[in-house]
Amino acid sequence: VAVIGGGESAVATDAKPAPPKPRRTLPGQPPEPRWIYAHPSSESAPLTAALWQDRLLVVTSESQASAVDLRTGKRVWQRADAADGQAALAAGDLCFVAGPTEFLWLAPKDGAVVHRLRYADGFTDLPGLQVGRLAGHSGTVVWFTGSHTVTVKAPKPKKGKKQEPDKKVVQAHLFAYDIVRRAELWRTPVPAGRAPGTPLYRVVAERPADILVRQEPSTLTPADVKAAKGKGSLRCFDRETGKLRWTKQYGTAGPNVGIAGDESGILYASVGADLQSFEADTTKPLWRVTGTEGSYFGTPLVAGPFVHTTERSQQIGAVERETGRFVWRRSTEVPAAGGAPALTVSTTGETLFAADAAQVTAFSAADGERLWKFQDIGLADPKGETVSAPYRALASGTNVIVQRARSFYAFPVA
Image 1: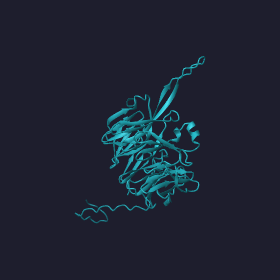
Image 2 (image 1 turned 120 degrees about the horizontal axis):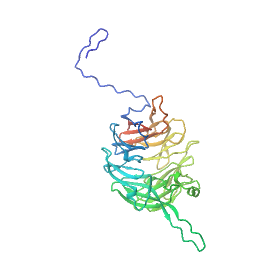
Image 3 (image 1 turned 30 degrees about the horizontal axis):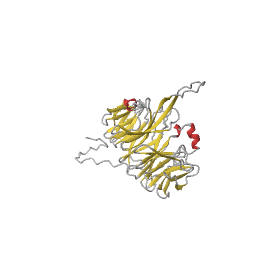
Image 4 (image 1 turned 60 degrees about the horizontal axis):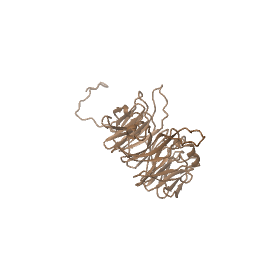
């Protein structure tokens, strides 16, 4: 190769070119992403995103489900059958997706449907079953709610009285289903929710013998809301049989406050402006930490010896599970607006991520050192729409996948 410059001739050399020096990262800047995936603007916007066996990022939308290779960031398949699906889960060597009308088991290589279970076929004794969002999962078992409408015959009227019409009554159940064996394990009746009737549950804590669930406030009936008198409640179900063990309230904790539990039976809930721990079975209060002025705690994250806290004031922290002592507490430095940031911890437990409407902030989980911040630029096109979707973080192996609307970034983490 000849290069002309300044009238001097270039001298040929057999020396190998020196490897490029790594780009210096300024303090606070995120590391270079290993890949970036942009969901096509010609397709429906993502509804859910989930990780499958640290190999695939599965994104569902109104039109289809798509799989992205977690090593390369390249899309490897699309499947229209799985449109409107919920978070993908590992079912042995297959990818399980719960859709509005059926369960699907997809081949991870190409997205082909290996098994299909329509609710109308799998639950024939519950005609017209409407399945709600998955409440949670553990291993090969998923828990979900469902409801259907039955006709209750009116009693025979007394002599001289008019016959009352038959009634349409909604019946609801909580199900446990093994997605590897493709078999229902149990179902148990639960109170119907607000019309159209399917109550939505979220698993708050998993224990060896039972699960603790909370009903989403938006599905509580007016009668349920009135009876609760402003308090929230948890239900405890046996993991083997589905039998309801108890229903309890915890202090003055409301029906929609941030709450999480651990495997030992301790709950951590936002109560007023504070975060309080309780014994799940006895409702006995254990410790309380004070929130920041004018704020409230969001959903805490239990990880290792800590309960990681998040507040509307943008304060993130780590509390000792045993004592309630704050180990550290720091701000994301985002102006307080909206709700508390959502928390995610890396697979090693060393890095904590706080995702909100403005950015993702990475902290050292042990001492609260603020490591870096990341903001997506949104649509660069001058005529592009304004992106208002919040950020989300998913931990995967040595990466954290950051999502904002159609954009996904794979950042290396400790």
